[in-house]
Image 1 (tube, rainbow, N blue to C red):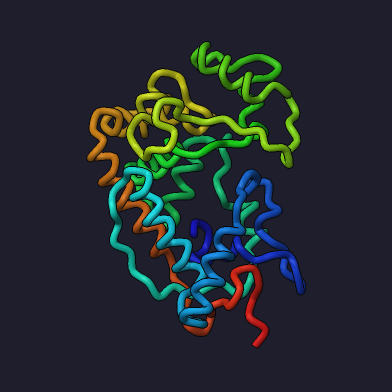
Image 2: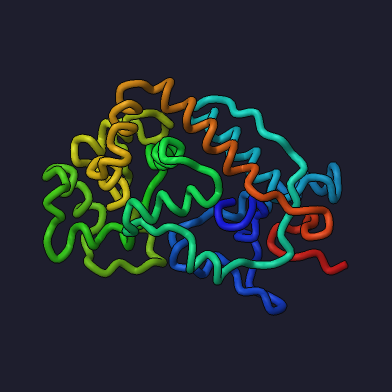
Length: 257
């Protein structure tokens, strides 16, 4: 969705000359793609070659936001699926958790998301978990002094090793109060030095973003409004044409005919 288009190139497996984007370290920790395959199989039985994997994921994100207590976002359909992987572009352009805030902002700007929208989209960190491999640099060999002491203690309990195995199920949550609700507690947390990732804490320390953090921490409706606008823009980024894309029968593979 982020690099070239909302085309679900990330779902492609490594086969027939394709190198899957899943192997990129930038995508480390992403799991449970099997559920997408289950939904796609059901759709193909009911209306074959009609709903693209890109639409499936975009609409799943829309419904997931609602189930997590967020706003309903009206999304268009008709997206096409990529016929190729973009592994090289992922490694070069996808923002990482320890990149500078200005670089992160520039990457979002390249797909039409302004500073306010970027701050709102990072509010998605209010839910879910992060693999320990992405946060141990803030814990070992010494704890990042910008981390709240009690929160750092929790993180070290979840991530007791300085070199966690990426294949191990070792995760920590950002928001401990409402971990399965898309709300503005994320912003309240990072203002209290409880940002899980370095990029989270940079939202507070950067003068470019800090005022938006304060506003979203103070007003959940404002956060939801800006999150909706930014996610909609992201979902409509550079759609593929009929010629360049397709509707995959199986989200894991390019169609053979």
